[in-house]
Amino acid sequence: MKINIQKITPFEADGIIYHADTCLPLIDAVKRKKVKFKALARYTYPGDRLTDDTLGLNSIGYWDANEQQDWGLDWHRNEGIEIHFLESGSMPYAQEKKELELQPNDLTITRPWEAHKVGNPDIGVGKFYWVILDLGVRRPHQNWVWPDWIILAPEDLMRLTTILRQNEDVRLRSDRRVRDCFQRIGRAVDTDKSGSNSSRIRLLVNYLLILLLDLLESENVELREELTDSSRSVKLFLNELEKNLAEAWTIEKMAESAGVGLTRFTFHCKQLTNLTPMRYLMMRRLKMSKQMLLENKDLSVAEVAFSCGFSTSQYYSTVFKKQEKCTPIEYRQKHEILI
Image 1 (cartoon, rainbow, N blue to C red):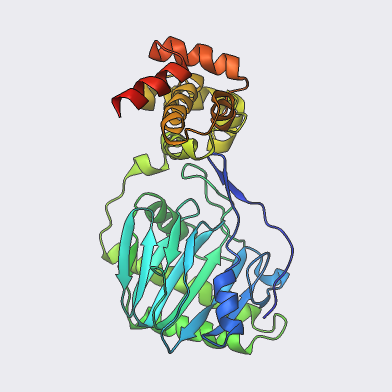
Image 2 (cartoon, rainbow, N blue to C red):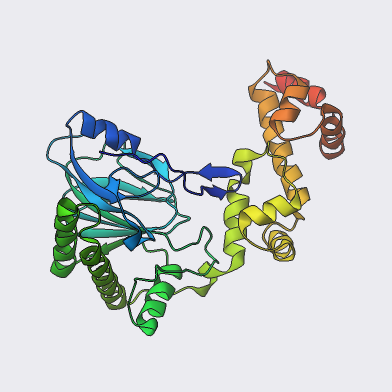
């Protein structure tokens, strides 16, 4: 197994940087001969190297576990859309807030901004395929750009893109055609020698997308246009902001991380929170600081202030007193008495 040390542009969400998954637990399992693994990949993904004939395809392959496993892939995000297929066995799988037990012929779709994990914590037994395509997006409102070798008719590709962007369905029940397509993908990956199967792989990925469109059309998926609105990207940013409050945020940096313009970011923030971006940031920092004051008695006020992103302890104390009508030390003492 080869691991390329090239770096891919990470996905930064709300101050948190999500690197493309390097599948280290999987690599370790392969070294321990716990699982059979075969993939073609680029960047940080494990596997034999993909050639430039399939640019936009970042990883394609499978693993085959015929004994109980002791590893899983924890929460991560990919830089592209990922299509998974479980041929046999069963597998715990989670995506955003949905936890599933995948069964044979289950197909799952992960959008670029969706966190997911495989295993809970172990993956179980089964044969599991995947295809990861980079569409040049990191946020829900951004327009998808498919690799130039995707040759679906423009109307079909637009329909597929619209359905994938405007619904949050995680799992589809596939059919024999999908199963056969992934099996053929597996054989193409197995026999590829330095790009010798690039044409075959391109055709199979195109065929897979046609089958995926057929499945989605047959499901009568409910489309929700609001899922592609820039407000959703801002909401995702705000939901996870507290995970990196110590960042030296400015309005400009927040808007850039959310992937929208400054005016649009400010507008959506006010709509979603009834607060300006910087006021919302300050309130989240104050909330975190109050928790730290009570749960970390050994930390000084200055240490709490810096941990929560305040530039100075003096400024923190001034803001805190204005909001809570007492100093941080008084707040801590008051709650110690109550306890």
